Image 1 (cartoon, helix red, strand yellow):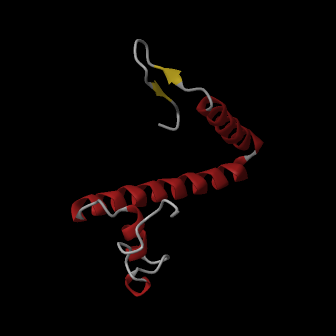
Image 2: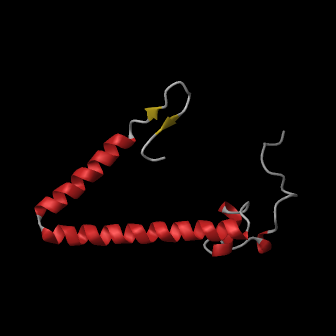
Length: 102
């Protein structure tokens, strides 16, 4: 009896697999169905998201230097987002729902 799984004949030889921590390895594993234009747009979105996260963290750190009131607002906002994320909203007359994560 054989176990279900990928056919060993169809797998690439280990010498031809890209390194796991390289860009080509990431593309081979996660973006294999993206063409060049889609890959560049994905990279632009990830870069923009990373930059906006960096700006938010810097402004949060600067906000902590201004006093406890700014820190309290930041912590309360994060707590509110965490609570709201646990309750998806059902769209009326459909089977669909949307959450803060969407």
